[in-house]
Image (cartoon, rainbow, N blue to C red; front, top):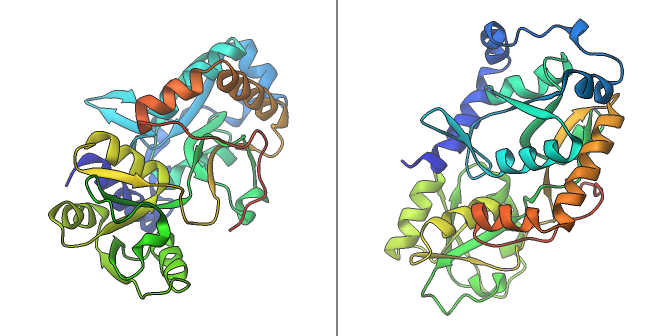
Length: 285
């Protein structure tokens, strides 16, 4: 199993562990509530440091490479912090510790890619999107029979069992003129292996994850565009009462996008660029 395919298991296991990871992480989350002023942006500028947290097991967004933090989130937050005029620090936490740690004011910002949902918008302040999270398809690079999502009619498509992407695939397939055989796997790596071997015709996952896989193996895989799922997005997350900080983050993201830096970062980690909303969209899920 490759590193980028372990991410789904890591996150699912983390969810099952609940808040245990937060308690375990207390040794290195030594910041106290008193360390944060009511105006977090002013406090960030005063201490000249934006403290961030993520789970560094979610390629291509967050990767721990022999202890070195890499990924789209790392490159983008470095560019954003430079625009704001502060340094940035990074905490590597279990996924279930990230949002509770934010609420406990252990750090300023979550840079783990968080899907914008209706329920989460009631509890957190979201940045403008940093990536498209919409469900999409990947095919073999030399397969000319699938040029658009609708071309999977009558074919076999694989995906990870229990994911929203597989459920969206089933709903999409039900509207096609020919039935689609949906083959479900324990993890995405098995789906990708069967796709490469010709045992299935396509694989389903979120668009950026597939783009990363295809970028790593361009002679084997290609992403089918456009994505077929309901439009969803990944964003960074702050506390609801830290709107001034989120406003500054958003202004910096939009500036980084306008000057072409965002496109360069996307090209590095996805192998292609993507257009994103300039405001926080209303969630579809």
